[in-house]
Length: 267
Image (cartoon, rainbow, N blue to C red; front, top):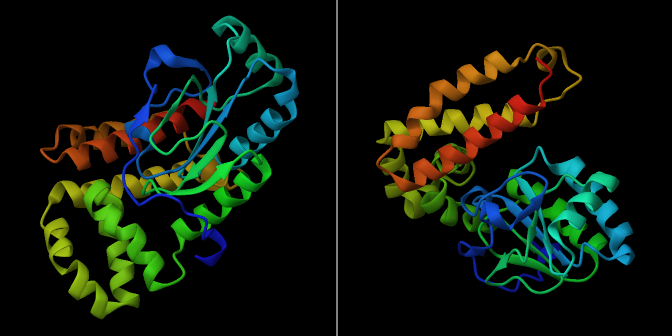
């Protein structure tokens, strides 16, 4: 991942702060758990300043382009403007990405930070255009790792935190790198395969991905209805009662994606 060699933090789950509902100023509701397993960009700025308007418009364009991907852009308002003023600004300029007051966590500076799904930071600075380029590269790498080292970077984290995703990706990894898969992940593969919850979760994650990342112009997408999405939500909701906390969190995230898909449908 030479193009992303600016990583400055070890891979670990970020301890997100101020993700509670009372800190929300506008845009999509999120939670600290919802950010797990996603590329996260945190934009820290004074959202009450007109000088930031052009950057905010560019960020909205990024959110519009990538919100169906495993990506979350979170605005962190660091200024003194009132909640009412910020809500009015968001409405006036059509900002729909999640905006929270003083959102952040360990590793988040006072400008812009971009993290991959494992919590490793790949960008820290003031250039929103450069940060957007990093987001695009990370999403590509996350979807299709290019070499063994990139695969293991993601898998080492996923087998602990997102078992449904890991179960599916380990199968593909084993096809490309059978020796490493057996030596490094043999026990994990057996453990995941032995769990009915994990195998069901893998199906849910794939359903959510296909529905969220659908081609809205396709004939199949035109047939998607709220009732069909509801049926999938009901089918997989029992996973929230799993004894495995990692299964519960990933299931909640995937179900939240389905709820978002439902909210975007006309009928």
